[in-house]
Image (cartoon, rainbow over all chains, first blue to last red):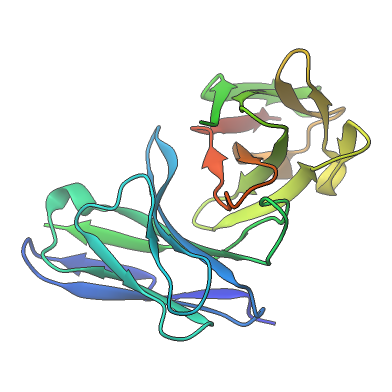
Length: 115
Length: 115
């Protein structure tokens, strides 16, 4: 059982380039999330999805776009990368629960550097 | 709005000593509370969670946490630290009821275990 799989694991971009991070989960979870983790900042929610075809903004959505065309996949896009987007990105998913009593399951992260 | 404060960004203990990691939360409704652990270069793994019922919650690897409503706290403890416990620990809160499926994380506490 793979759980939550993120690709790629590492990437280096130049300022202004674009890229897409892929998250796939095989647990049939309804909810999916993208976070960024920066030193001393904990995890901050970028965007999330409560079901196929839906997306919503989190705490720090600027500069990112997302899509959830299939239930198992959640894509995070950077249209024009900036050095401030250098971070570790985590995808997570969770089962449908009443008011979020279900834990989130995390991938191993994507380490992204913008030069 | 919900929030989490973890007291102490870095805690250092000796092997065999008590581990105490502090977490205080703010929530306008009864909270669901979680502790996650992150080992180097990995994603977050769930240690334990409190939703309803018994306020003392036992998790994996010998950790436990107690929900104290009057103190708005959910501190994580382990009686005897092991070298393998060295990691970063995150407390998180979500709000019960409604349609809020988001977790709010604390900024993390890095636990160092000295031989």
